[in-house]
Amino acid sequence: MPTPTALDWLNAEDFAEVPTPLDLQEFFGIPPSPPESLDVNIREKRKYWKKKQQKARSDEALRFSASVLQAIADAEDALKRGAAATGGGESEFQAGATERPAVSIDDVMRELERLLFRGRYRDALDRVARYEAHWSGYPKFVDMRAVVILEAVQNVPGIVLNLGLLESAITGARQVLQQMGPSEARYLTLIELLEVAGRTEEIPVVFAEADRKLTKISPSFRVRELAIRFKNDTWEAGLRYSVELVRQSADDRALRSELVQMIIGRAVVELLPLIWRIFKCNDCM
Image (cartoon, rainbow, N blue to C red; front, side):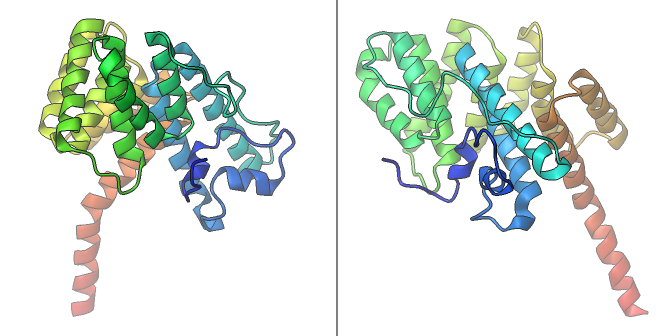
């Protein structure tokens, strides 16, 4: 049985059918977080599951992540707006689902994705190592292997991976884009791998390629691209684009939250030096 950690609340996918306020607070990690962290934890949990949804490889994973995101919205409304909450997400990706030995590449994919969506990143990484000799010739496995390595790096505190393993994941992510065709999920996997590898200078080129090759691009993907260029765009261009993204996906709370944090982050960076100079001048008077 996996050892509980302080971040287990991020992976909790549902809550009691008739939840108490304490049930809903625990769903958002309170405790161990203090009550004043509620807004931050809601935002972090929504971002965490939105990223899972964006990189999902199967319809089952998409349904599951959408279900959890709805549960997050319901719990938030119940805690902050007095709305009724009637339980979390319902999906085939249940934590107690029976695992069976993988006999096909589709079995391997489903098993690894289930482990990732249940927060069992080390188990998924161990399973990849076990399956590599037999399944490494399959593009689907190369694709999921890159996702597993990425998720482990991003979500296991203190994990140390061989640099060659991370580089091989990047190579694999590029390879499957050629072999299996472009998709938002595959591009995002490559972008985030480059990010954790410190190769951020390559990311704009990947977004440019995605813009050329994807026939339809979601507002959520556009937000990720905007985050790269927002620091250098004019305020007017960035805000206009943000408004347009919200119009395209008005019900997406994760998207709105990301845009707000992006705007606040830039405002803080640009205004803090000015505020500091004002206070400094006042002290000199």
